Image (cartoon, rainbow, N blue to C red; front, side, top):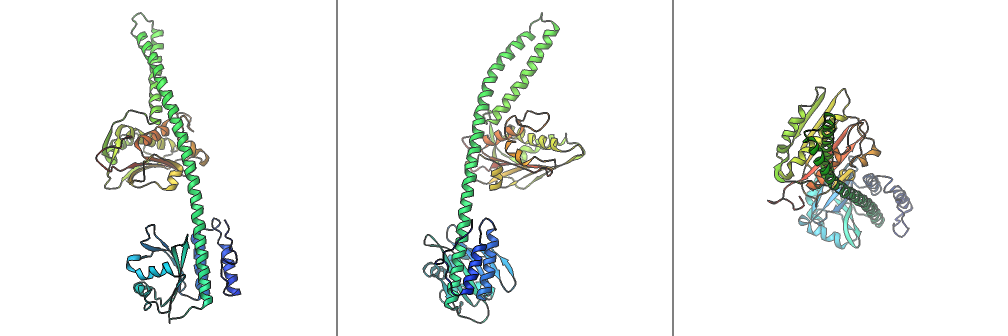
Length: 441
């Protein structure tokens, strides 16, 4: 989105400075360039034009308790920094001046009553004179652009003030545009997430319904097959056929259980347990089937807080992930790494997966990472679908049942993979926040 500045929006203290502002505004194309890069360019240009030592961009925090520096350019060193904080409680006069003045200009900053409270900051950076321009959003100050001079105190001309004001307006518009674009992107992500959740929910209802009805049909198959096997006069060939029917019925019943797990409808009993302790037996059991050509390592952060768990379902889910990881490795071997740690899913994680949490709460993350061939990017959205598989053999219910377990767990799941670079599957389990298990579990 290109930024266009009508003439009345950008003051023109001189033809040269007007040209500088024009160049800056044309280069401030949010989306085409990162915002950090735009702010760095603006700060460098403003410092050179006004002949000041530093130019900084500060933003209020969400509670308006202070300003945080998001861009600081020091012309003396050529360095860019960020992260410094100024607290309202420590500098009330300065913040009061920002709220009522179009600009705060102090020739001798450590003596001016509006800025003398900044003496520690001024001394730390060797600043004598400042020209600060508040940035407004809907009539309220949301940040400030600071132009700071080092050396003997100096005054700023009217042309300097106009130029600094235009720089403040430009930075404000860049930040407003970036925020608007982020909001649009977040809304698009939310719409996509809602659509994917609805699709998964619909498939879950379908799977649960099919599994329920098919189990009823299977009960008839089991009853008749068992009746035939109890018949003493049954000839050997018919007895063998009845046994085969019974064996196939058992496999079909297991598929029904997997479908119910995908739908999050399996019977469950939850316990307040620590994930690392619950999964210790799973890791030991899996280690026994790992060939010598495969490196298997488990790393557990300490301490791991307790979470409400359906122990049997989670053990099955993690074993599914471990088996998938092992099957993804080439015949020559590779590595499987598991970590159990404190972590919350990022926005990128949630774009790749599903979030069944009731709210943003602290989580314990279990990650299973392999060094296999990975998954094609265009296939990733389908890996959660029941019966979808890229394997020559398999039901395609492995990851689908893991998804169902995390749905019942009120957790989150994400898959990250790149062809030729392996796969990482992450599961997030909300930490227990009280003595009672969540009702939905």
